[in-house]
Structure formats: structure tokens, C-alpha cells
Image 1 (cartoon, rainbow, N blue to C red):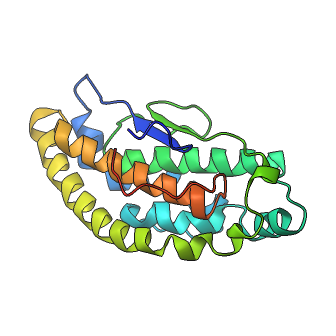
Image 2 (image 1 turned 90 degrees about the vertical axis):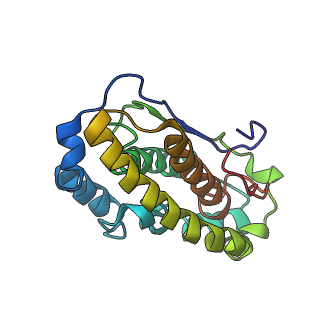
Length: 204
């Protein structure tokens, strides 16, 4: 991983056999938690898990935060806590849908999905950059569009592998986690606004 980037993300690789039954019916089993996440984010997260992490940006405290950073150079702590915990929860749901973990997503416990970024000193952030970060991240959106298509294919292949072997192929696992990592870096930069450091074009 790029250890120097402020937004850090990882998922523990399952060393035990994954549950084949819940894997087989994962989309159906996940409906309640997807509905809950959709309610929390004002209905912007669709059941289609490969777009969930991008559209989740609408559930993040964004526009009020832009105004606070531009005019007051403040990042209210409770807004930061909301954004971090919302992203953590959404990533647990996404990881469950992507078959990375067979434990039902917790609304508060970390489980096997780890996301962290530091509380920023708002006075050290560029006060005008929040106005254009979402636009500057446009190249990432283009790359991530294709990466999410590839990860969807990887998840389908992994679904068959788990059904037959109980194991998630390690290379596919690393790839899907890498796409999630990249997505979280973009979300942290462009929407949660926790860093001015431009996200690397990297899965690691």
C-alpha cells in the first residue's frame, strides 16, 4: 500500500473457508442492510454494489463542509466523525456484497474492513481547493469506471470459486480490495475533504 497517503484502507484476507450458502444468495441476504444504508444516505445508494461507493458521496456532509472550509477554515469534528463512520459502514456493506467477508455487516464494529484517515487541521488545508476538488478528481472517475467493471467480473468469478472451493482467489481478492482502496482515496480527497494530497493512481 501507499503508506504515506492519509486515507488508508484494507480488508483482512479470510483464512477460513467462506460460507457457501450465504455466498450463493448474497444479493438477497444483503437486502436489509442495503436498504438501511440507502435510508441513511437519502436513498442514493442503489442495490448495484459496483456503483455504491461512488454514489455514496451524496450521503457525505459535503456542501456545508465546503462552505465552512472556504469561509471559516473550520472542519467541525462531528461532521468529520459522521463522514468517517458513514464511509466505514458503507465499505463493510460493499465488502459483503463483493464477497470479501461473509460476516453480516455491522453498523458500528470494524470487523475485517479497515478504513482510517486523520482529522485534518482545517487551517493547513487550502481554503479554495474544496471548490474544485470534485472536478480535479475527474481522471480518477474515468479510471474507476473501468476498474469497477473489472471488479464486478472478478466478483462473479470469485462467487463461483467460493461455491466450489469455499475460498476467495487471493489475486482477485487483492484486486477488488485495491479498487475499493482507490475509491476511498478519491472519496477522502474530493468529498470528505480530509486532505489536499492528490490521490495516487494505484491499487496498492
